[in-house]
Image: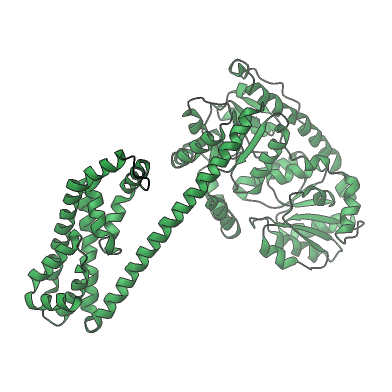
Length: 596
């Protein structure tokens, strides 16, 4: 068949090209594209004018596409209507036809454009579908001409350039087109399988939720972001505190790409994280960022709320707070919303883009004061301390010697628990270098988490015990004399709850920099960000253990205050979930006295 069309082209010229391309564009199973390759090659040998070939091919393809569109409009629309009303065809449900049409409307422009020059075999069917679905003609014409310009230029140009071997070039281009079609089919089948899997999972979730609803405990939804482990730790601490009276579900509504990007940026572009934190930390940019996140995540948040049906929502990350508030407002029955503020000295202003949450839980007096300055009603604001996971309350000092012995360490030597940081921004290498530079027998428990690279680097190193991810981390931290690492709010809080001084060796400057003032204000440890000062401090600690015991009194005082303040969390949640909470929520709770 191919030699026949090429001979027709050579014998009858432009009219033959126009007619064949036109018929192919309507949907006939012939290759008008192949003739464009041949036409380009003939133009290279002087038989045709390349520019004239372009306009002939373009006009034929566009008119053929338009005829296919018209046929779809005339014949396809009644067919769609019949299929959507047909109840006897088991292999095509009316719902499938409706969903398919809706999906095509969302992707029609891209489909029309790509089928003009890339996946050519779909061109005719897509023309019919666009017409049958009454896709706006102006949009169809725009995408059709845009794609057909490339659909004419590419084969003519390739044929012209590779004139002597245009057939091979055509075969290669056809292989790319076939690969594109195969990829599309594979993607479609993957989506179908994934949707069926999700459907079954949702059915199972629905059964679980139905079982939950039959019990007496209300469900609390805890929304987190895995961009940093501290937010998950905070949610788990709240879960442990509340699960005696409530069902608590922890959900990260964000894509897994968020966590992967944060990890990548923490290891390679800490400066970018500091820049974006500072750039958005003003009322206008904070509101704009939250508005955008709520806009793109509204469907996902709405789906989560519909699936879980919580009686109360708590957020532990600013980036999910605004979207959660908007999704909650759009529900038929709004539920109480609580913001668990995170940091110790100062939080990002995105936390305050929503000022009408039912309650704001402030972990420190500093955050309480900041919230007041940002316009949060005092009646909605509660000073509750920093929630800490139960394991840090249940780990005793009497386990220290046994833990160190199991690790192969000498209990009499200075032991540092060093957070390697799963995200890689804790600067563990610099700290280890500083410790080694002292020349003193200092032992290191290195918590690498999921950072496999850090684990491999120090596995088997003398006086360093590498600790991969473990859910029960508290006994290892309690076995150390000093806890060192990045100055995150979670790390500082876990240290003072174990009655250990915290040594800040690294920070995300914009976010965690203010936390250094918090450490110094309450005498909870030391701040040493430079290798030289770290080396000097480790030398002093190894030679003078009294420096550690001197911190103990202030650490114990802050621990006692925090544990007392934590009792207010349950009171706030209980009141929000009690009947008539709207009348009682505005009664301020008694604020416990914070240590000075």
